[in-house]
Length: 127
Image (tube, rainbow, N blue to C red):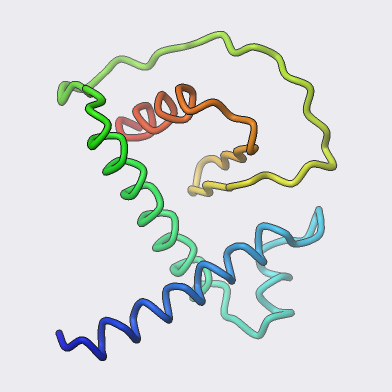
């Protein structure tokens, strides 16, 4: 692949990241379908872009976790249930990141600890 092609792909991917940020800042209660209509984007197209952005973010998190010498067993882990401390959270706060999958949605605030985020990534690898 030529340098020009890879630059074009990266520019396009950065545009998708911006779309995902705008989607995450949509008004409460607005569905993906309605948001896509206002932007003139097919819902299936946006869902594919969203998945690719999420995949790269998760891959990036895994790489940085591996580079910080975090040992994660390659054996399948049993699900762990952890009691989480209750923190004051306002419904008006916008999440810093949102991970959406067909069966669940995770909203992450900026106040989340690095330790918790690494545990979450570990659990998601085995989900």
